[in-house]
Image (cartoon, rainbow, N blue to C red):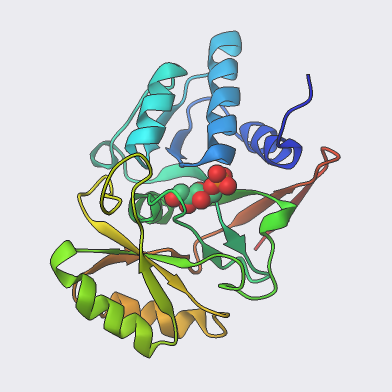
Length: 230
Ligand code: 5RP
């Protein structure tokens, strides 16, 4: 049977081939990483592969448990060998927007602990400029939502509070925070936006991942994968 997302599947299969016995892993969130976690579970069952992983969300934790992937916390290790995760946009300098699944805060913490941070995308995620196709998610303390909206307005964005699907009211993250989706026409200077948001009281974290990715696996619908490294 053909997979509904052959590009995502190709990237997911490719990352699992980079994993070897004894590795400690970061387990990302989203549909592409879910395919990788399933393929990793298959290797654990068929080869007895000995790996452990830090999940980046409740969703990743639940899937890892279903797949029999042993879990680990950041308290138990110095560094992770490899973290894998999807992205919403990737530019040519390996800068990312993440957070469609509102998991970007934990995803960034885990990625920053990894010797290799491998990003899994299909080719539709590659962009010339960040912010042109997806909004930038900003995780905020609920009491700070209006002041942070003003900061985002001042940066030229249109911030929209993310609302629940089959839940009334705002999306509440795994940390109990809310998410503002900041719609830009484009983000020509991601480093400047990163600095401003990092300095804004009430912002827990945001979806710009700068200087973190070491590898990008770009899957194509024909099953081929471009493996780009910094
Ligand atoms: C979740 C994320 C995801 O990794 C990102 O949205 C990509 O998801 P998908 O693989 O489903 O396209 O950042 O917070």
